[in-house]
Image 1 (tube, rainbow, N blue to C red):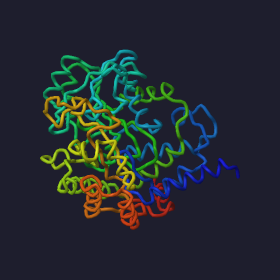
Image 2 (image 1 turned 120 degrees about the vertical axis):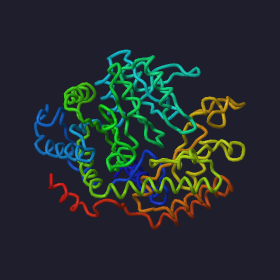
Image 3 (image 1 turned 90 degrees about the vertical axis):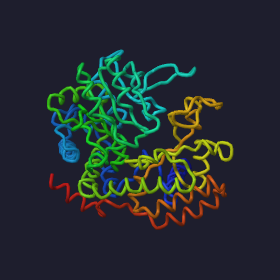
Length: 454
């Protein structure tokens, strides 16, 4: 075996060992079950199947068609809808399907949230901001002109009243709900009623909350006015890295299909479609229990952090209704540092999180409603916040008491400023009892027995 190949194997093993001993709190991640991993490692990973089921450009797709049809049927059952396209290879690609279907080809008009207020880079325009270019997907790929919805910083949500005024003045072709920082349900019903006044379409980016929605929590955007919903399938929905689009209007099916292929992609990732099918069977069986625990753990974690001296946002609203917890760490700027600094300190202790912009970072202010302070606007590389997620730790079997234990690690590192190398030993000992994926079929065979129903 060549030295380079040995090096690759060594790096992969080191990564595995790191996460074996780590506390994973990235809100954008989850862990897949052995059955999902087996499906993703199938021969499907070598194959091509351009087009829709039964209308492929390639031969040899007989069994691929069957699996993809099962995956679509499971998606429709889980989300209670009439249409599902599981070909998008990511949540960003799923968003592009919505842009293609609902906006003009160049200089179409869309309303959504700004990035510092929770919006994703795939929602953003191509524009200059503070002397630098923003290469947002909506602007760079689709040429969209984006107007931002009003945001209520105190409640970390879209401000319906001020947004109604923006929508009526701007008259967008599409309003996009959903966010990367997504603590509470968005006001889809209120604003979709206004959008109908001039024929605007309603999209909803459920990348972060897809599993919560499918299991009956958070909100039900398709029943609240959304025309179509884009998904990532590897966050609260614990499947492989892929995407999907769903809708519950028969009249939109052809437009959504054509907006995806051949408009956006050639072959899609067939092995991940197989893995997603298995993940959906798991969520239909275990999702209600799992996602209830995810939300309970997020609330418990937020409470424990807050009690230990960290400023968790939205205490007056119970902190969160999703899998996410957002912490303002600007008070530690002089003693420990900002988001990027604290992210590195936590990673040294094998606690994996991500830094995140807060809405007031762009003003250099210290909180909602505050005027611009003496500080310069904060950069995304070292912002004022942390975004934490409980999806993966919950799937590894952790509960409310473990959320308190994890919060104690945060206190020791950020407030008490203890040595991360010493805390790392405690993290490894803590993680030792949480190595098995829960809320899934414990053997691949059981997952496949469930699939036979379809």
